[in-house]
Length: 82
Image (cartoon, rainbow, N blue to C red; front, side, top):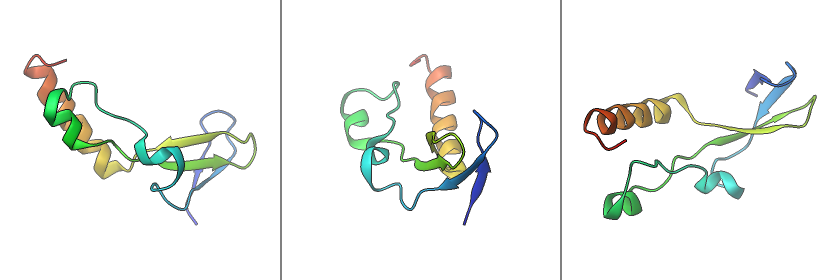
């Protein structure tokens, strides 16, 4: 079972079962994606993590997906889209 340190209280967080359930399915959409490209490209999925100490539920994006979003952002920023 994967665990992390909670950024709020320092407690133990455990990773949720799936990014495909609940609100994490459509968690975040890039603001620089507009028109047809934005509608087709979908959202960034995030795994929900639960803190066993304070009860916070925090969605985290996998590193692979985060790198892709970061690259898209830099491309949009340099192109004047942001």
